[in-house]
Length: 157
Picture 1: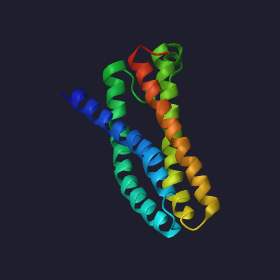
Picture 2 (picture 1 turned 90 degrees about the vertical axis):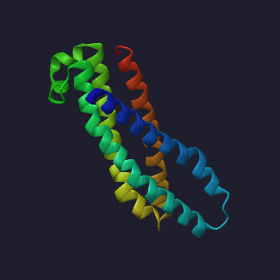
Picture 3 (picture 1 turned 30 degrees about the vertical axis):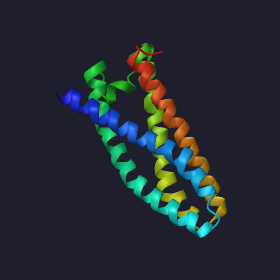
Picture 4 (picture 1 turned 30 degrees about the horizontal axis):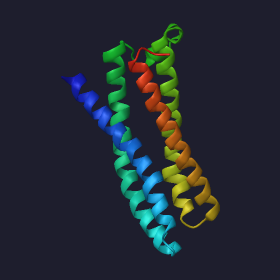
């Protein structure tokens, strides 16, 4: 039963996190470009960003808790076991290693984006551009994680 609950929470959290990034990039950002007043754009973006950030980090925490449970349940790999050399010689091990590397990159980049660049972007066109680049890059990395999750469930590289 634990595996089923962990898998459900993992999938729902991934859907929310990646889906939210797609929604902001493909729907909210283009909508904001139609607003003539920069102050209004900023208010809407601040509201949406703060709301999504809170819920997004809840999803990230759920993913970070359920991921190791699923890794062990489906593949018999503990988190420390992933760092053992023999694991990297298997298709599953290589795929897990790449996926976890991307997860680490995405969490680190999201921390920088949400808690350092985002606040600075409010009053700075330079930081606004950098935050936008980080946000779009995070989306690409998140989509790569999804691709590697699918490859993993199909047997690995």
